Length: 66
Image (cartoon, rainbow, N blue to C red; front, side, top):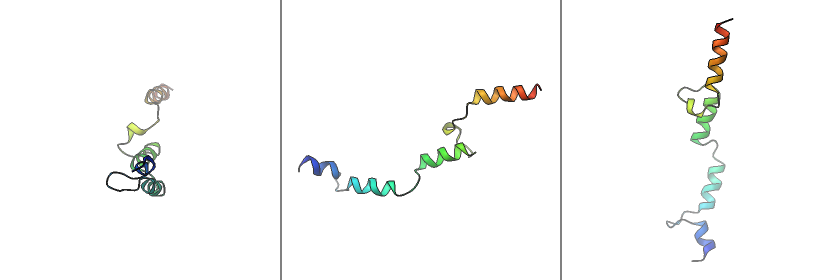
């Protein structure tokens, strides 16, 4: 086998480039969905959120003292 052939197929014969092509056309990945939910209020997805928790706490404290 030449290097070009080995780069395109796994040892079991799976065409790596075809799998990548199908994955790219299949929509969001599991982690992309979790990230999207975190940004839009999904339950249990806080680790994927880009919200600054300390900033929110400070804003809440400021609001309570007004």
